[in-house]
Image (cartoon, rainbow, N blue to C red; front, side):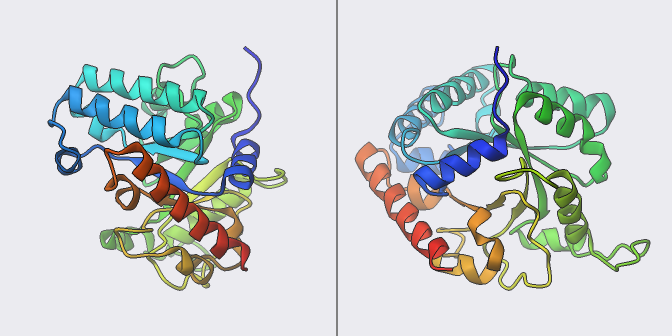
Length: 284
C-alpha cells in the first residue's frame, strides 16, 4: 500500500477545490424521527447512506459522530464502517468525531482503531481530547504521521462548560497562558515547517466571539463547530478567526441535515452554506 500524502496537504487541496465546508453525520434519535425513520439500525443505515450519497462527491469533509452509531452496538459500527469507506471512495475526507483520550497503551489502541490504514474504521483524521495532558496524545500523533492522517485536538470548544478547563491559567507557565492557549501552542510546534498546511488541527468554536487574544496561527486547520443551529453564521468567521480564517473548516450538522431525507434538498442546503462560507473567507 503506497503511503498517503499528509492529511494537511490533502485537506488544503480539498478546501481549495470544494470549499472548506464540513458536514456532520449525526443520526441522533430526534433527527431520524424528523426524516420519518425508525430509531433502529435500518433507520441508521438509511440516514447515513443518504447523507454520504448526497454529500461525499461535493463537500471537503464529512464528520460522522461515532457515538450515534456505537449506541446500536456492533451492527451500528458496521454501518459506520460502510459510511466511512463510501465517503472516502467518493472523494470526501472523513474526520471521525470520537474525541478519544487516554494514556499509554490505551491511547495507542484508540489510535490503532481510527488511524491505522488497515483498520476498518480508518479515517483521514480523528478528534481527540488532550485533557490527560497533551503528551498523552503522542501515540495518536505518531500513528497519524505514519499513516498520512491527522488529528483535531479539543482546544477552545463551543460548549459553555468547556471554559472551566480551557480558560484555566497554568501557574507553572511563565507566559501565563491558559490551557486552551497551551494546546494551540503544542499544535503550532507539531505543524512547524509543514507545507501547505500541517496535519494537526484544533477544535475552536465559531460561537466564541472575539478570539484575538489567542494565537490561532498554528499552521494547521481549525475545525469550527457552531455554524447554523448553534447560532454562528458564515459572516461571523472573519471576526472570530481573523487572519487564520483561511484555515478554518466550518462544521454544519443540523443546518444541513434537517433538509433530509430528500437528497436534492440536502445538496442544495450544503451548497448554500458552502457558498456563504467561501464568500466570507475570501473577503478577508
